[in-house]
Image (tube, rainbow, N blue to C red; front, top):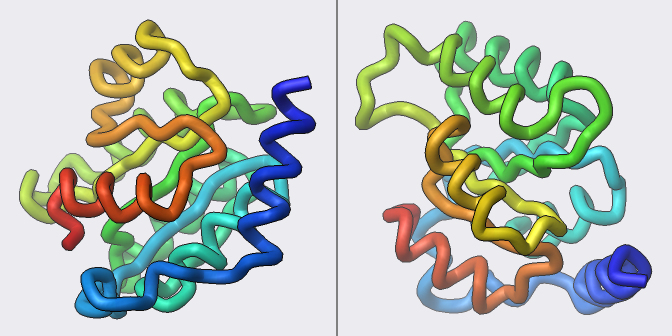
Length: 159
């Protein structure tokens, strides 16, 4: 039931299109973003919301995310932010974040990617695990509103 509601709300976001391009988000247009989610509709909804303010790449699972992140580092084109689902086949979001952090060992703290967990798990325990083990900087429950994106971006210093 909740999954159906989430799909309906996310699909509605895709139909409405981006609303973040006005005013306060314009200055972030060079931001590089990686959206990691096994559900296409979720990836597309987030990409559409961020379309006017960030270049967004997508990964369907944790393994692909780690590969894309590694390639971006090698090209000296690192991501600024990663939206990372927790529940995925293969590497889950926490494991994916740990692998990404291993790749960043030599990266100064100020230049490390900001990881925002984006999940259907509305749980204090899961949020704490995300901060403690995945070193995420924010935890958003799907489907987040566009206003929530703006608020989170401000809170984590992306605006």
